[in-house]
Image 1 (cartoon, rainbow, N blue to C red):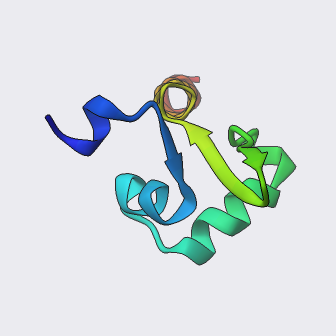
Image 2: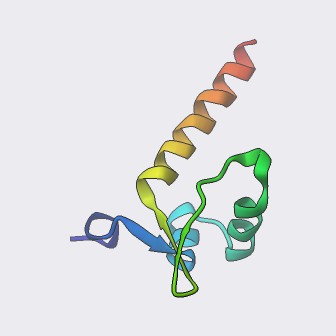
Length: 71
């Protein structure tokens, strides 16, 4: 079973790898309100992000871009 299948939440380093971006890019996305990037849950100072929310966010961005190209 892969890491993606047995874990619903990822820490920032794992999430950056999952999204194929740097940790700095992830940090910026989390602070950019215009992106509406899913915010992590913080437990004992450690951030955990729901992978399902990330997947939904990415799908919504693809749809938004496709609509803007058609318009």
